[in-house]
Image (cartoon, rainbow, N blue to C red; front, side, top):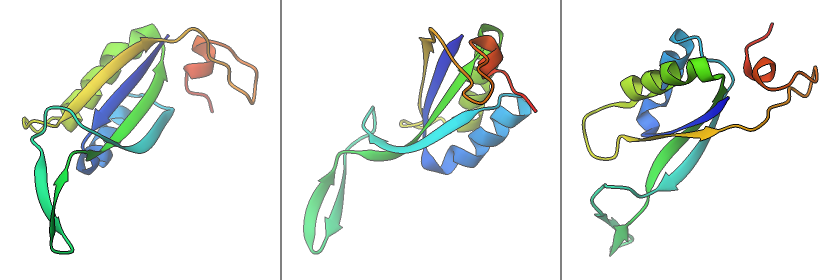
Length: 116
């Protein structure tokens, strides 16, 4: 099992959700975050004062998947989030040692697979 984390532009949130759904990936957690990668710093005016904006708004997707769904998950996130510009985001994949579905007590792959 893996935990796939995708950090994308906020305006790409719905596109990524739709791509994950089409790829039959379920069980997604989403958080609004701020971060800084390769984007150029921008300067904005706030109450007449120049302010250097160092952090960009981003959206973080977390998806726990079985090993056979990892590549499908990565491809869905990348294809939906890509604009070709600096700041499109990143995808990280972590090993997932254990997962437990609270409602049923199912563990590991059974816990990260969709149920009805």
